[in-house]
Image 1 (tube, rainbow, N blue to C red):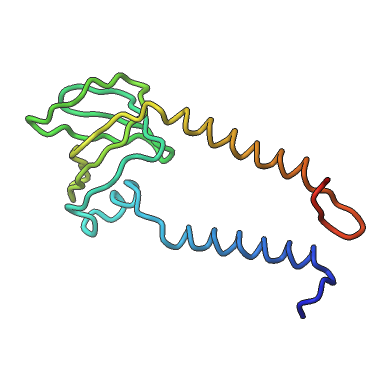
Image 2 (cartoon, helix red, strand yellow):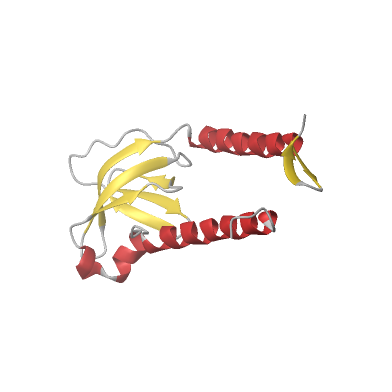
Length: 149
């Protein structure tokens, strides 16, 4: 059972199992997004929704803020007395909003995410560096995988 026979096949099966279980776990504990709130307004009335994943300002004025996300545009109402920071269209933001059963999202807090693009670039470069390191430091031979000397 624990022999080295078919070791590469065992490693591939285990890696595939880890990927499938990770994907399944990610799908099963997904937080609701604003589209879910609109689909079932009574269930989510009064709850706070995080508007952060890839949110970018489309338009802004003193009474409302429109941001775009992969699911589409969402309109956030700015409550009276809320001091909205100066955020130009196109800026990446994170926001919290309270949902009303009538289908409105009232802005509760907002902050700019100016370094979001840099975080993505650094993450991609790190992943590329790991792949290149593995490519240049591991060889495949008759005996299987081994470190290059």
